[in-house]
Length: 527
Image (cartoon, rainbow, N blue to C red; front, side):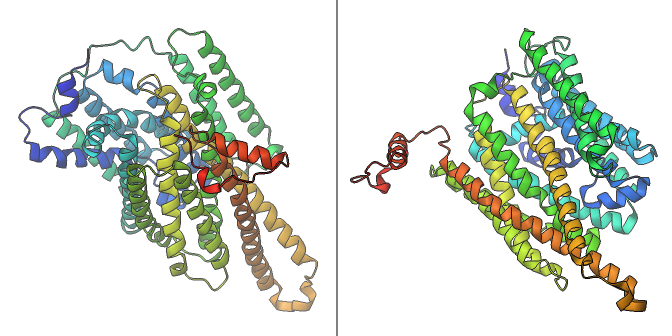
């Protein structure tokens, strides 16, 4: 059985002073949390560095999320097989080697595979560090308290580190970022060797009982989907056979995994949980809406990078304004859960903040704009993003236990970080392109190059700029209207607390019966 004293104590040996433990955990946490072979603040620079399409870099970035979600399904099993020191030291050494491969390879597919493995290995040491952090932030194991504190720290630190790396890459070049990450992983391995204990979490369990075949096929399914959705626009949508085949392979392999899990004794993924728990099913709807709104930032990126000519440094500096929003969202979550505010209004506030972000972006994007005009919309983006990360994840996992629920949480994480974002990104990209083409077609009806004479080519550039502006604003306008059905769906869901009196009230209205004597104030949620 598990050694509870060891579990509560944490990672380090008996001789390590208590005053040194917290600095060591911080040194371990942030590099492991942000380690990657893809630097999101410099993705266009990475494309030039490798001499490849930007879609390859996006595919590598998605591969990290896929790898992390896969390993989450078996992370407790690995923890029961190896000592904490073995997990942290071994994983960081292997990640250092993989980052080194990213630094020296010129083959983009090796680069994508290395990033997939980095994501797969990353979850094992991350869990070892997060467990003591969780007990420090929430001694009673309260998920809502932990999420309200952890997510602002995690997202904010990633944003800050991305900004620092953008500055570093701008001054010293992309390749030096890899060597910086290698050094950080080797440092953690060295500190882990010196300070971590050698005791086990519990009795030793074998790894051969893990259903590796299902993990392999889920990986094949998601990487096939990754290729299909990432290259959908670049390969002319569904006119390219490789795109169609990648999506077909993704669907068939995932169906095979579902069928396989129904007959296995030791399941990795419990797909019945999606039928059993309404919270899990409804969270998929919320995560889809969240992904659509977050994907709308690509319209802004296209305008700033493509039309206005800003560089990655400017966008990285702008993203720092999400940090105040993250802090405010975390405070709202901490206070709201403590005071028992209903979660539906917290979720609606998150979508409302993203709605205001899109509204202000819609009103602000214009030819004579400047970057300072986007400080407050970016604050709102950070506010809405962290609220939805906290609230939706809390609601999605509230009925799932440990460790049996890790397979379902793994699938939810896969959906949140990759599937929903990739599908939404492809949809947003398609609509944006179509609206731009429509705008060009409308302008071409009144275009006559003969009238412009020697200034005709300048006019073409102006027309392209106008089409980007008009197409982006049209897309943002439709996303603003989407807030109406989102609000209806979010506010009418009961979140596990059905209000029978309100249902009777609504039924009477639908049937045309009198509601005299009913008071709206009395229609509070049934306890």
